Length: 196
Image (tube, rainbow, N blue to C red; front, top):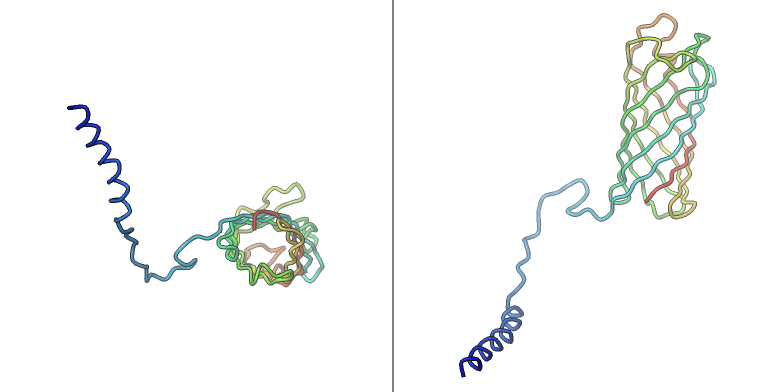
């Protein structure tokens, strides 16, 4: 008899537990009124990287620059990352090349469209290097370079783009090269691959 009572108690507990659980209402937190840069939730986190080529003027002479960029992409529109670049020819017959590296931030406008616009701001530190790519002068200078690019979605994980940029350089205290020698616009071309 004792075992029958125990079995009935256990059976009634098992039957009543799901019913009681169903009766409980799910308590949801109140909606947040705080405005944030990316909304109230992170919908997508991606990344990309790739080479960058630009053609512009240094001391009124055509020169080219090569580099690479890598960034984290938030909600498919906003990206933060790093970039490093070096110009290929010597500046003003000094056997010096400008190197620069720093942080970048940008935005894709309508990234699902086949052709879409990208805006980017690069802020970094530059230096003057000799032909062996060693820094010749110990002092550094700040460089700022905004740019706009027309991007094309080649495949799901690859973009290509062409655009324009303008390079601003802080004061350089060197007799052979001045900051005005390095200020100028450039035509840019890039390839990006990653998880967009």
